[in-house]
Length: 551
Image (cartoon, rainbow, N blue to C red; front, side, top):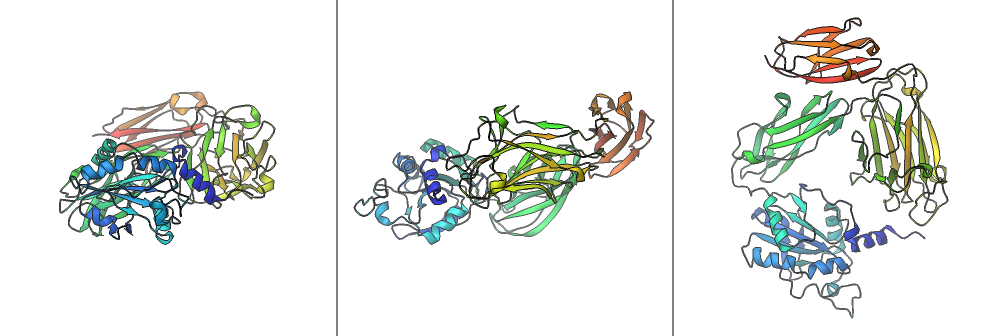
């Protein structure tokens, strides 16, 4: 019988040095917790944070060897004695036993009644030791995304969290310098992180985490998003945030036609400008032309225009395997480790955007797949397509369990041989004529075994079209412009063209459909200064170039 997830997790916890899964992301807001320590004292996280202290939390298990090694290294003990209550009193250290089944005898190293302990964890430890019952520690482990022991977190007074790991006393204390200053000004709104769209093929929702880092309630502020000198979104936010409270705020929606570097800042009156600004690159997925052949051979990472998502909200798991390729003909492939993926986990691998606009003939997707069950599990692979940048999807292919399998079931982590692959063919004819097609490989885990994909191909739907790079044949000048913008097209094989001038809101302010013109003039003298986009498209390709208007 397959070992249970609980046992697998325990092994992963014990050998944390080999674990790569992420815990809570740096900058996340730490939820409050209150535990009673082994001396009967209440240990409340936010009470310490409200007092301006940085809190270090060691989440360990008495049976965990690496946990014991770090505990007995003295690094946390020295940190507490030098900078905690016995010393400068600027921080607190807390030990939290992460296994709810652990009794106090295990904490005290009483081996006559506990065989599952590394030693006496309590003796000589100066900082509070907490051993919560399962009803308390299980929600804590979930809230703090504890994936392995030991996990060493540092929590700043403003509630932001960083996993500092098993480092020296000096390194632990040095990490504290990254904490924002404790609230001291009355009016101090702060931007903690960007939470909006990071990759798009059309509109981008711009949103941020706003925090009140002031001593008075925050009731209003203005947040502005800029693309260079251009304002693309703004909100006059109002609400009521207590000190250190947070809220996700949507600044606005911007229509993009090129990759954009945003500067998002608080632009209203503020007593502390040091925490007012975030920068974020929003990657624009410009449609790629067919044919497509992706074998993952050029890098150990996915193409830069591909991305991942996870319907469960946890860490994405798709990677590029550098040890196995389709039918043994290469060394790389896309790989998903289902073997240790809990049942119900959903992991998506999203391609770039493809242009099917000029296709009137059938479009075929082919790819190689390798998969084995553990025993009888129904891990599932779907291929889905979206014509609206991922807002909605249609399923074009689905297989699971024995239908998906290309090899016999195995109780070892599956690594395919050269003969344990199959080529799949998916008809995408219904998408012909679409100018923006996003494909997705979605795996739903049933806690079975591993899956590999390689040699993804999209056939050229119209052999009569020779896709070219229009940027080689189009010049846009002057740039910057003081009013007039000239577009010169030089090349007979460019074909009939359409030229648009688009503002940062995505509005077309000028357009030429004169298919015979090769030299065009656009008068922007009545437009506001800022960034504009020149979009040139034909049946053979498309290009976009930024132009700065500075009258």
